Amino acid sequence: MYVGRIVGVGRTPEGRLTAAYRVSSRSFPNRSAEHAGNSVRIVPRAGSTDAASDSPYIAYECLVWNERFGVVSNGTHTRPIFERLKAGNTARDAVVSVLAGLDREFDQHDTPRICGVVDLGEDRMWLGSITATGLAVMPVHIAIGQMAYVTTYEFPMPATGQIDSLFGAEDAQKTCEHMIAGSVFGTFDRPICAASWVASGATIDVATLDAGNATAS
Image 1 (cartoon, rainbow, N blue to C red):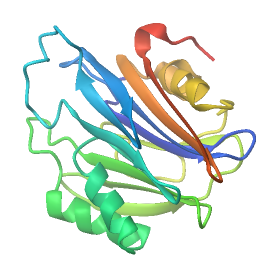
Image 2: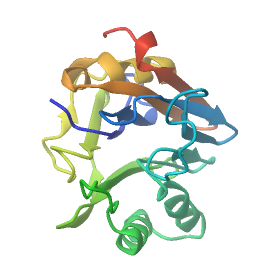
Image 3: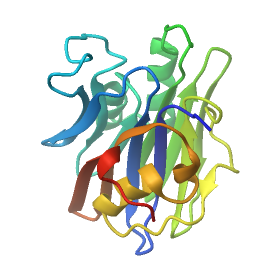
Image 4: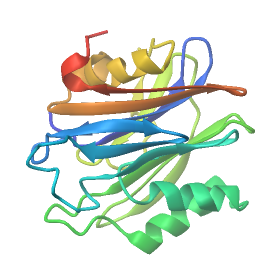
């Protein structure tokens, strides 16, 4: 099954909160996730046919965070949601205002914008999305060892049934491997790269991974 990009939020077996992202692509496979500072960007691989593109649908910030919040998404809405959270907006209001303002991606597929928010201060998580026909943001209540997810295709709207109950990754590196090849995510086609952020108090663990370097879990 091809589901496109994937956003996940969850709890590791040790109870640490996590936000994760996976690029799956049929059209632009030459991309990697690149970590710098408190941010991860999806970037074209040097020397590839995609490297000359300036499309915001190909290269963008997919993860940003500080000591309180983590935001993960499939496009240019990552940073605006994060800035609204820092300014004091609730997670619901930050997601709704940004997604409603930007709308879905106006490409040939009307690709949905999807996102996740992790609030370390309140120990809470949300998933949100906007499609050509709807807008949703939903708090997700996740047990230890579970990850909730949305995808750009097939599962674009947050739903209670979109839970991976076999999320056994204990750190950011294992979370990337899980997003590419583990459990339900291993059944989704054309993985390209992944990024993850795992937090517990002031301790932040971040990893990126190209699909060719992943192992099944």
